[in-house]
Image 1 (tube, helix red, strand yellow):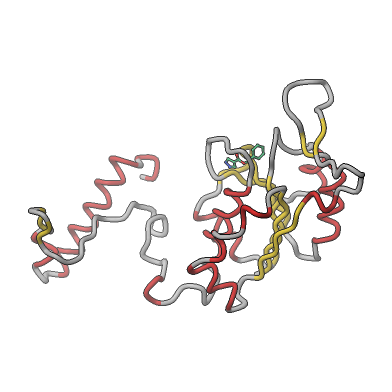
Image 2 (cartoon, helix red, strand yellow; image 1 turned 45 degrees about the vertical axis):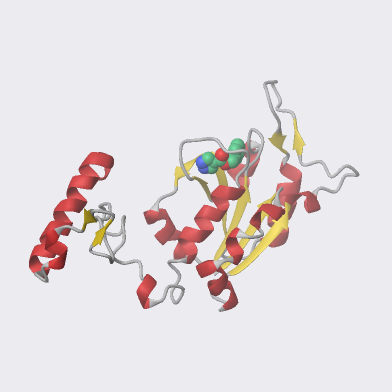
Length: 221
Ligand code: JF5
């Protein structure tokens, strides 16, 4: 998969995507990730990327020209162009699975009060939010999306890391898990998990998942 990112803060991307599973995916050629500075596509002397909204009001908007020129330079035949802002549809595991099917993404990180509406209408096929809160810019949400999508690409996870059993794949929260020691600082592991009775263990885990989901995330039931 090829992912291009357009951002005013390319330095934020150094680090989080150079570690662990994402690093391994990049080194293996499963993810080709390129970070581009939106300011490089501003061609006036002052490298202006923002301007005041027509009609007044607080804050600044990202100007359309640098974004249009960057997208025209970077996008290919099959590229899905995605804006990242709090106004998008909410990203979740189903959206991650959908994006993991594609070959080519171009994500544009929002900033200030957001995008000139013509960017939305003409350039973007999609707009994603990672949740109902406001960040200073879209770099962290873009990295969250890249992480969630990359781990779903064929060959990225080893058998031990495999995702099919995890939360949101079966639609419930994970059951409680324990490893050795069986008693730690006076806290012991539930008896059933030490019983060797695999049917009872499966029943206990299913019940714990359901209870925990009902308590913490009733919206999932
Ligand atoms: C951004 C205008 C983009 O704050 C976010 C965000 C929150 N959930 N998902 C994304 O993105 C940065 C802020 C203001 C456009």
